[in-house]
Amino acid sequence: MMKIGLTYTGSDVKHDNYVRWLKDHDDAIEVIRLSVADDPGAIKECDALVLSGGVDIEPTLYGGSYGYEKAPKNGWQKDRDLFEYSALLFAWEHAMPVLGVCRGLQLINVNCKGTLVQDLGFRGDEMHEASPGEDKQHPVKITEGTLLADIAGQGPAVVNSAHHQAIDRLGAGLSVNSRAEDGTIEGIEWADPAGKPFMIAVQWHPERMYINKMADPLLYRGIRDRFVEEIRRTGVK
Image 1: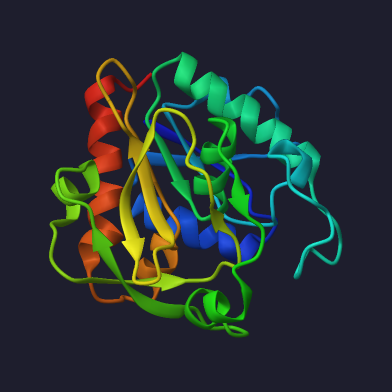
Image 2: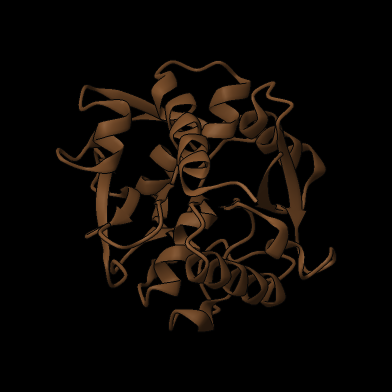
């Protein structure tokens, strides 16, 4: 049985979207919920890690400020940030494949000493921030020669979007695999993957693209399938 650790978004509905996407009707895959409130040692049972979306990362972890537009009304969750930091480090130390989604991409970047744009502003929000109950959609340009290009090709692509923050300074050892038309970083991977475990992270939400049967299936199904393929290649406990 393949066991994929999935960090908890804070919403059962959103969490279940990830579970359906990752399993894709495959009964040989078990998705294990990871959070501060669950078994803190559960990552040790897993074969891979998915860092999910959710609340903004605590600003002191990347030198940010608390007083920015659209800061979370109920505050940040530093305990979640630190828990997911430790899960990510454990995964990398044990050569587990890692997949980051939205906040997960940002957490990987911050972990690698990168920084974040704390709010994209009015123009950025017009393209990227979700309306109530509905994601935005916009084109992305995939970078030639990247892992993402190998998975999804280099043709015109459209993704969903539901974020008001993004990567500012890119973290050490990372490279950009896709950008939105306004230059916002939409995906990252290792700059030099040699000797490192599989890692890819995207700013969009492939789990909701999957649920809503959006176009460009390689940007949700293709990423998921390559992730699962890498888990099998590296070995299932």
